[in-house]
Length: 244
Image 1 (cartoon, rainbow, N blue to C red):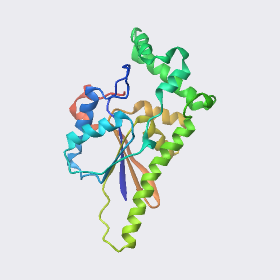
Image 2: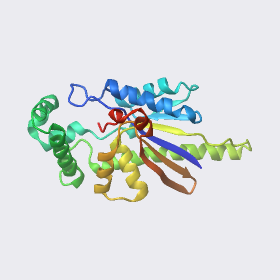
Image 3: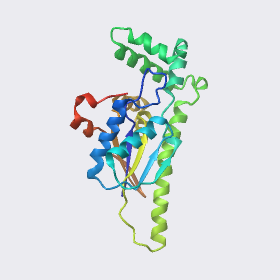
Image 4: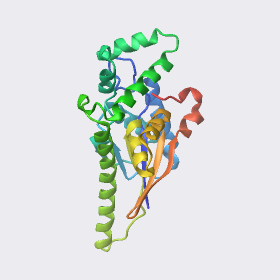
């Protein structure tokens, strides 16, 4: 049996001109996770989506972990949904997200207001009623993420069968770490546990930055061992626990 760890990226730069950029806290969160991982065996592979916040999270993780060299594979199937496209299609006046952030921040409860608006924007996207308006539909997004997961599993199982066929001694499977996003993790968990779309959205809302979700797989099994673990942040203090 082998394990895949899905790691959500560190805190990004919401409200800035470039969201796809870790904040200083986001980089430190990933470094804390790397330090936390020192007690574990060296991963056999790193996978990463091709967004900047994914690669930056991996880089900061490595700084904290300081382990031996590990192969890294970029897989765009683990990229997050396009939240900018989703928000723009929800509110036409939000073509400039920096301006949108400025407007919301002037309100009495900006975080609560944004969460409410973003949830409504997500529900509009997930409904499927306006698929033609989006660059990627909800169904297309789910299909892409699930395919990426099965790409990894198929490759690992094929390598295992090859080793067995050659008669070589099969070493114990090592951990595979995937640096990705909350939405991607949510729909993968939804797929495995056969959850509803609404339950997937609820998981996404609760995902902390640099949280870890562990999957187990073999030839005949795929399961969720645990979800949204952020013990490394709890150890550092509540100020390190963030949602976006």
